[in-house]
Length: 249
Image (cartoon, rainbow, N blue to C red; front, top):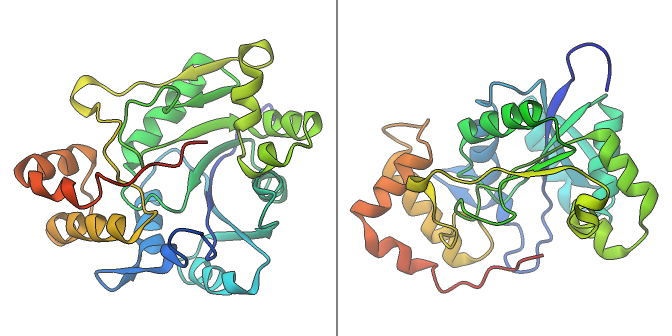
């Protein structure tokens, strides 16, 4: 990192060729692509110096480049399969010191949670911060924070395709033998690790659409507490996608 204030940027990994729900990040909710709704929320994160959409060179992802341009955020195109290098090269190209790694299938991400995660990362002085090892927040609130130099170190240590498909898998595997790690746990009222707020299937899309329709019109800045309260008031909504099996890395 530089001697001046570290440059903190979010990378959002997104592509059109997802296996379970192709084109999911451009599926419409309230006449907007789900990725646009997510970017709206990411723009409210106060600690960020920039937002970079990390997509692929596949022609199918041209529409994502156009979306990034329309929403006035940066875009980097890299490997479709080597996501580690895509994120790393996006950071290197944009002079990023600290990467906030996000995935484009989380349109309900809470901006305040990201600000808290980044503040905790600097407070703890660790190599890597996560809020999902072990999981306590709902699925879809996942955040990872680490220095670009840490990811450069990972890239120099492993050629394993699994490590390169899943950006931080090597950090989990190497553990505290190589890296200092902190897990940010949810406060008791937000602990709900099996609640699916992520977009991976058609049922997830139906569920997330219900949440946006119930909250967004009156309050586009709704947060995780608003979501959890809404689901308490409408408990049957959880039945829409609670049967979906999460694909854990």
